[in-house]
Image (cartoon, rainbow over all chains, first blue to last red; front, side, top):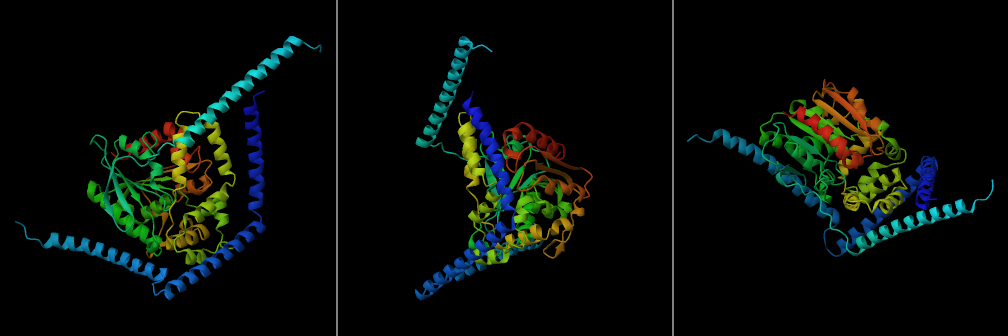
Length: 100
Length: 363
């Protein structure tokens, strides 16, 4: 009687049965409704927490997180514009540069 | 049947010996666990030598060094997913698909999307394809002088690669898709979870900006709720095996090293791909252009994993019937989403087979 082999066999049987049961449960409308409600409440709580943080920064006369992110977004955009501008400039330079 | 004392004694001795063997095996495992706990091995990943040849914002394009200078003329560009890290394809020497391709004589390039910051939340999926990816493909073409390249996509990276190949067929010679969902209606439980009835993607993106890794991980855990338990049990079972712990720790490092999914790209990905299945139905638009998979004419190979729950085989192999390539292959191999390319079997069978397929079409 190999105890490890026996345990392996029962573990595998239990895992398969438990997985099937969980899959059944995870496909019920009850599960999806629960997921939707939990997610909804979490998102509301997050929004409220973000609002409080923004207010706190404003009271400290500091820019809010949203404002800082927007500045970074604009810098990103500017970097893209410059990168493309550089490419077209290089092409123009190559075309117009006199041959030696 | 009469009682045979000698036979009874022999049975008891046999059980005793098996118990002792079991016990000694457990001691060996305990010793290995102890060693691991006291001095955990340092796991270094992504070691194949490379240079950065292009960068715009966070995304970077790597060029891997060739082994001895002789390379096939058609370069291969690997496009990885927007979640998780590229180094799953370059774990460590001997377990690196990228190293394998390089050693086969292929010129290997790879896109590393980098870690999206809050400032990247507005970057659209269209820009990932027609901006970043297009410029990286052009960079590879310019460096190598090859007008057409091999595009190799993994997971969502494969979906992006297929979209790109449909929009720019003139730049793609070979298209290789690994565990790539195309028909999202056949996307299994992941598709069910993100159904618009109970998954408010707009509210999620508006609240988070970029989608945090823990949120994505929760979704993957739903696919296999007992996964962590089974993983721990397998670790205990296989820890005495040579090389197992190193592989296990490298995979664990990768699994826990997820990155945020850029918000706007996620919104479009969930809505257009998962909820509306627009790519499969021919209704997807990228930068104002309709994506028609029928326009793909490159030599095509799709590899799907038989046990893949993230991109089920049915959602991947269907591309064979949607494109117009004459050289058109789609296969389902044993393994899950990761195992099909980094598992033990993959090293011995999938890699050489894919290597041969690529070499024949890269000369």
